Amino acid sequence: MTNYNSLGELSVFILSLVLLFNVIGSSSRKGRAHKYFELNCILLTASTFTNIISVLCIENWQSLPHSFCTTVTTIYFYLLMASPFALAFYGYMFMSLRKRHFRAAMYFLFTPLTISFIIITLNIKTGCIFYYNEASGYTRGALKNITYALTAYYAAFLFYNLNHNKRMLSKRLIEVFILYPVVSLLISMIQFFKSEWIMSGTSAMATILLLFITIQADIMDYDITSGLPTERHFQKIFNNYLRSNFKMCLIHIENYGELSENLDEATINGIFLPFGKRLESNFGQHVYLMGHDRYIILSPKKDEIEKKLPPLCNDLATTVTSDGRLIKVELKCAMLTIPQDARTYNQALIILNRLLAEGVRGKSNDILVCDSNLTDKMEREDTIYQILQKELYVDSLNYQVYYQPIFDVKNNKFKYCECLSRLFDPKLGNISPAEFVPIAEKKGLIEKLGNVAFEKICKFMSENPDAIPAVTVNFSVYQLMNPNIVENVMSVIQKYNLDTSRIIIEITESIIIDNFEVIQERMMKFSEKGIVFYLDDFGTGYSNFANVVNLPFRTIKIDRSSMLMMEESSKVCNFFTSLINFFQSQGLKTVVEGVETDIQDNMVRSTGADFIQGFHYQRPLQEKEVLQVFSAC
Image 1 (cartoon, one colour):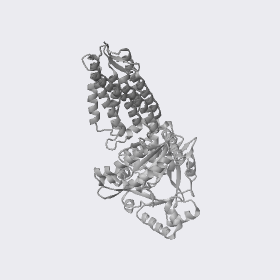
Image 2: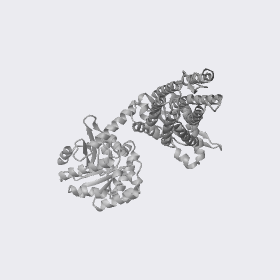
Image 3: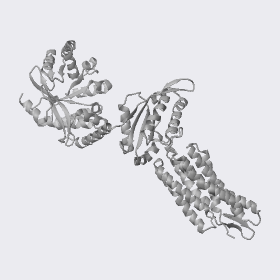
Image 4: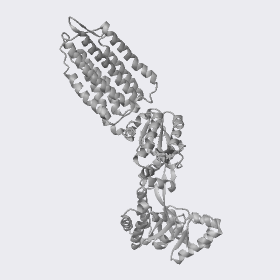
């Protein structure tokens, strides 16, 4: 008689009890698929327990009734057959893409299990798997290897399902599901050649324990409150979606912050948890929670999102709470195609956020869709950003400063120049400041752009000491908010041995309004160093006479839009005439920008403006050209 070693099975039984206790007591992952994981743990515990009892029956067959031994071993075989089925069923429910071909999958899962149960039941009479006789006790029958065949069948089923649905799994879970048949095969081979070693529970335990450890490691990939996978999980599996075209839609709750400030947590959960559940019921496992106020849904079909999502958003937009309050929820949705529009997770989010930012607020019924115009625009922006990174240095020939002469009406000649940044690329050609300056602001290069431009200007003025009396330089809010701005500017001026009277700083009034005390302090320090200030873009909607009078400005620049209004209305022209007279009475000079025609020139001259700037007098010029213009004065 074979002496069986069941110590390993006993260890598995004890470990399975501990695992079962942890799984049932866990508060995480309460989805339906994960209930089947609990079933796997229960089957493992029950099968290892009955296997131990069965081994005791086999070893003590002479002193125990054969009917009892047969019953225990039969129950064990039922549980043993059910274990690979349960693991395969769990794997299908966990990873399947929206349970496609559910009926076919159930057929392939239940058919072999049903057949094996019939064979086990008939075994009581036929002994085709095992039987007890009076001479040798426990004896294996002709179908003794049915458990190996069934395990191999369900392993193949898992492999097939994994291949079709691996985009829904993290790399670690894919590895676990692949390890299951490998580990089972190795352990089964050991038991096949060493029949006295009882290892069927060890085989199942190895896989379930790997799954459990992986799931626990991935708990933070799921939001405990809603049960939805989080952004962290989506980042892990994003590349899996690149294998075929998927529509990726971002839903943004625009007034979530306002709602969370005015509503208690229970009310917030009562509004948004059901919404998450409805998304999940419509789009399956393709729903991700991206923080409190954002959801991502994916679908291989654009029509599916466009058909199902708007009604869900409409229901959420007007929500009645349990206590009868009407809550308005403002949503916006944006959609793109991966990998057509975006090939990386960050790129996809940038595009979707751009769509949301540029879309009209409150149009929750409309899904903003990414098109080639947007992607082309963003690609161009990325290209310009790369150009800026490469060209922002003092001696660059592609990032230059142009100089637009400013005409002195009283002396009938050019007096100053405004400095204007220009960018050129061999492929893109001339790039307008209206395009590259906002990109520099968004990408964090605006301060560097201003600093490089300023040093270029100082270098040019130093190399041509008698050519141009002074230049005006535009300073951005980013430069002025730097606490070391005064020291930085003065060090560059000293580096090129310039007189401070040759540098005039231009700032817009919008900068002053947002940061009055800081800008006032900076201006006073600069004034002490002898640097003069121009107020730029007066008349664009920010104008405040207190700022004009109380801050150390030398000159006021009236924006082109004001000049155009003067052209359309004599009343406006009279108003600006009075305004210019008022500035002059306060010791301030005025410059009118944007003059392009003789009519505009005559009109501006009639107001009594001190200086005129515009294409009518001179366009922005390169260094050599502006030197020629001033040398001719």
